[in-house]
Structures are given as structure tokens and as C-alpha cells.
Image (tube, rainbow, N blue to C red; front, side):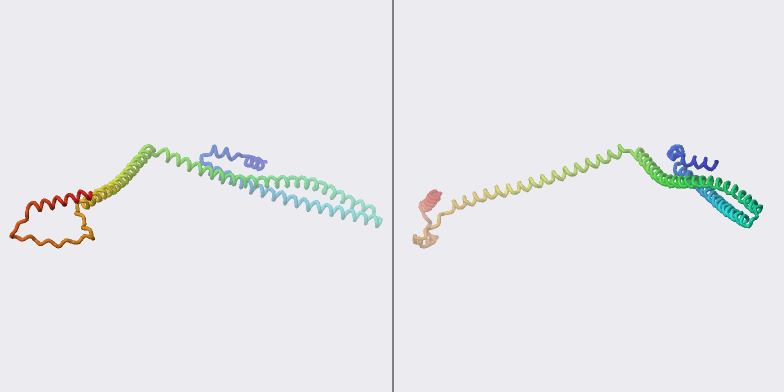
Length: 261
């Protein structure tokens, strides 16, 4: 009964309780599976022994049945030969084997029941071990995840987040200032370009007006149908031109300019 009590204890053990109570859950789970596997080995040995005993009982029962049939035939043969005393002895021997066969049959039935129970326990224990291995892997993954989360939380709690955030804020402020300077430079460049074009436009107007004024100040061209005057002879150095003729010519030129305006 000690083996079955231990099997029952191991099979009905709660792995979650082991995880909660153990200092090292992973090692405790591994130890529990090792114990279950040791029990499995012992249970297999017990099943093998029970099956071997069952086989021996089956053979003994079969031999007893053969002896019963044998002495039954001997009794019949003795009666056929007219030897009643010998027939009686054969029947007595048959009765002995009949009693032995009955005892063997009862023992064989008990052994068959035990073997079937052991086989079911063996299958159940194998299933529990397989389930425990699967659960161990799942719990191992959960333990690994929990350790990683704990390490991450410790790292996060150990970080100086205020200084890190202030550094990010300073960098962001520098980027904003640089963007503002770039935008201002672009606006100044655009304004300078516009002023250059404005100066070109204003200069063009002044130049046009200056050209028009020059054109107005030029003397009118002589008509083509009028005969050209002969070139004036240069004045003789000996005789000086009269001052009245020079004034009249200039006055006449001013009148013509006024008429053209």
C-alpha cells in the first residue's frame, strides 16, 4: 500500500502550490517530475510482476484442467475394464485437481483484477507525467517572462527619467530654434529678391521717362521733300558774326521744340 499511497500523493499534487511555495519554482517542478518518473518505474515493475504472476496462475490453472480431464478419462477406462476400485482412485485424483483448479481460478480472477488496476494506474501516471512536463514548460516560460519583466521594471525604476526628458526637451527647443532661423533666412531672401525686382521695375520707368525727355529735347529732323540747304560756309575768321543773328537762330530753335511738344 505504500507504493500506491505515494502514487496517489504525487498524482494528486498541485504544481501551482509547488510554484507558490518553492524558493526556486523551476527546480521544484523538475524535482517533482523526477519523483513521478521514479514512481512510474516502480509501477511498471509492479505491473510486470503482477502480469508474470498472472501468467503462472494461468498455466497452473490450465495444467489442473488437463489433469482433471486426464483422470476423468482414466476413471472411464477403469470402469470399461471392470475395475471399479481403480476407477474410484482416478476420481479421487480428479477431485484433488478439481479443488486445486478452483483455488487457482479464484487467485487468477483476483490477479486479473489487480493487473487491470495497475495498468490503469500506469496509464494515468504516464498521462500525469506528460501533463506535468507540458505544464512545467508553460510555467518555465511564465517564470522567464516574470523575471524579464522584473528586470525591466528595475531598470525603468532606476532610470532618471526627469533628466532624460529634460534633455529631450532641450534638443526639441534647439531644433525649433534652428527651424525658425531657417524660415527667417528664407523670408529675408525672398524679400531681398522682391526688392531687387522692384528696383528693376522702378529703374525701367525712370529710364523710359529719361529717354522720352531726351527725344523731346532733340531738334526735329528736316522733311525729306524740302531741298537741303547748302552747307554753310564757315565764317571767315576775319569777320565776326552778328550777335543778333545768333540770338534769332536760337530763338527759332526753341519755338520749333515747343511746337513739337
